Image (tube, rainbow, N blue to C red):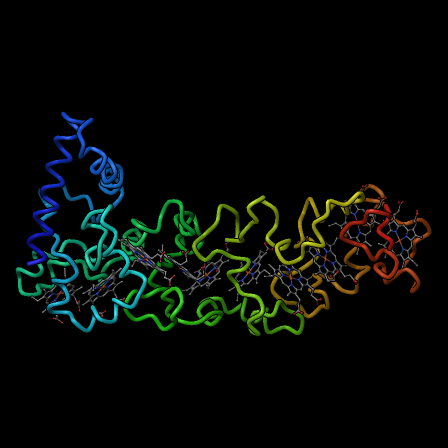
Length: 323
Ligand code: HEC
Ligand code: HEC
Ligand code: HEC
Ligand code: HEC
Ligand code: HEC
Ligand code: HEC
Ligand code: HEC
Ligand code: HEC
Ligand code: HEC
Ligand code: HEC
């Protein structure tokens, strides 16, 4: 039986591992075991599933055994990306197949399918289920900041957005398509993107995940940054990045959201404040807070500030942002 030979192999490797570490680092087989060494250690430190000492490796029966009773589940699962885990021999049985998520299944099988002897996800807290997923999707992945995310701290877990067996979306095992998935909980974002001026998220041109990482970031609001650390906005609006000979200070110090709402607005150009002179005058009111233009009064002539100061994001030619 494949299950038995697998167990036997696992046991053999574990024993070998022991001897290699203690006695025979230089042996021919050392290369093989060293390879599995670090990942096995990493597991026992972090993984609730995998902290079995080597004597418990025999608690794992392998996905083929699960298939004998759960054939429909297996057949559907085989078409998902998690099937790949069966090929990952390095992590050992605790990181492979069904048991990579459900934990060791030997007792469950011996009990003829005793539900109390296997991790079912059903009654587990979100913290607990997410921790399981993070044994593989944690450090070094898109999910590495999950613990600090607003999602995690508001008790939103992986399974609110993903389902390994019942995904509605082909891509990324999502329970719903985007942006509907997000709108289900974020009604104010939904309202913003329905405003007359908006990033075309509903139209499919831009996605929430272009600007946000739903798994959390090192920055606030789960807003992504470019690898350089600059604002994500520059990814698509590179012409605003400069560097310019004459920078408009707030673009660099306060960022785009000093003047724009990122989602949607009733104001053209996603401006926070309209008309535009009112936006400028938020900062350019008193000489102490910034310069006021010479002879600028609020007569009609001067109200459309960006008619004259039209390189408002910065200029290489004009210190007052003319063309
Ligand atoms: C990536 C983690 C993961 C893997 C791998 C996995 N499962 Fe699951 N399983 C879950 C989660 C999570 C649930 C809870 C329902 C859901 O969210 O899809 C679940 C639920 C189940 C259920 C309850 C019935 C159902 O359909 O919800 C059965 C039975 C099951 N899994 C068997 C298996 C078998 C058999 C395999 C291997 C072929 C397997 N699982 C692989 C995570 C996993
Ligand atoms: C000997 C047959 C058998 C084998 C082999 C088997 N199971 Fe089961 N399993 C069952 C039965 C029977 C149930 C209970 C179904 C029920 O009551 O709805 C069950 C229930 C489950 C459940 C809980 C489903 C729920 O509705 O809560 C999970 C998860 C599960 N099995 C996973 C696995 C995994 C993973 C393996 C392989 C390690 C496995 N099973 C191997 C027979 C088996
Ligand atoms: C045993 C390790 C392991 C565990 C535990 C695990 N995954 Fe995965 N997951 C993988 C691997 C491997 C892939 C495939 C990555 C690839 O294709 O490059 C994957 C892929 C995914 C994908 C991407 C699918 C796609 O189409 O791009 C999602 C979403 C995912 N897992 C969610 C989960 C969730 C939710 C859980 C917890 C219920 C979980 N995983 C638990 C190893 C794991
Ligand atoms: C608020 C919803 C949400 C939550 C919570 C969430 N995800 Fe995701 N996840 C997404 C969306 C949307 C995508 C697809 C877009 C992308 O690639 O970022 C995705 C993509 C992924 C991918 C495939 C792309 C990649 O990053 O490699 C994996 C793996 C994944 N999620 C795992 C997880 C795990 C593990 C958790 C729990 C720790 C989790 N997700 C929690 C929404 C979510
Ligand atoms: C299951 C409900 C749920 C889903 C689905 C969901 N969120 Fe959230 N999200 C929350 C909760 C709760 C918070 C924390 C409270 C808040 O700020 O609204 C949050 C916070 C956020 C934040 C950070 C806000 C802050 O103040 O730091 C962003 C950004 C976000 N979600 C984006 C998304 C995106 C993008 C999606 C879709 C991929 C999504 N969310 C799907 C519930 C959800
Ligand atoms: C063009 C980039 C961009 C897109 C697309 C985008 N966001 Fe945001 N979002 C931001 C920025 C930037 C902030 C921070 C605003 C601030 O700090 O003033 C933010 C803030 C948030 C917040 C925190 C509360 C709030 O309203 O300020 C939530 C929740 C959120 N976004 C959810 C979403 C969801 C859901 C989607 C998709 C439907 C989405 N975002 C699409 C850039 C974007
Ligand atoms: C994924 C690409 C992408 C990202 C990231 C992005 N934008 Fe945009 N943005 C666009 C596209 C495309 C348009 C053109 C809008 C249209 O025609 O629907 C646009 C238009 C705009 C407009 C002008 C709207 C108008 O009415 O002319 C402003 C202002 C804007 N974006 C600001 C921002 C800010 C601020 C950020 C960062 C928070 C940002 N964008 C991030 C793609 C992006
Ligand atoms: C000091 C306020 C201010 C800041 C900060 C600012 N903008 Fe603007 N932006 C404006 C004004 C005002 C307009 C409208 C110009 C007009 O009326 O022609 C505008 C227009 C735009 C437009 C549409 C017209 C065009 O020039 O393409 C885009 C896109 C845009 N801004 C992106 C950004 C991005 C990205 C950032 C951050 C890097 C940013 N803005 C920072 C004030 C600002
Ligand atoms: C968030 C605050 C803020 C907003 C809004 C703002 N500015 Fe500025 N602006 C500044 C600061 C700060 C400086 C740099 C002042 C200095 O160097 O003494 C500056 C510099 C300038 C300069 C160059 C002045 C010089 O002497 O170098 C012009 C012209 C200007 N702004 C025009 C505008 C116009 C037009 C608007 C409206 C579209 C606007 N600003 C909106 C903060 C702002
Ligand atoms: C009809 C064209 C025009 C309009 C409209 C206009 N300005 Fe000016 N602005 C100028 C000229 C001309 C200068 C002087 C340029 C120079 O010194 O070379 C100037 C200079 C400035 C300066 C720099 C002052 C300094 O001391 O260096 C600021 C700040 C400024 N304007 C802000 C604004 C604001 C805010 C508005 C809208 C309320 C506005 N401008 C509307 C033409 C205009």
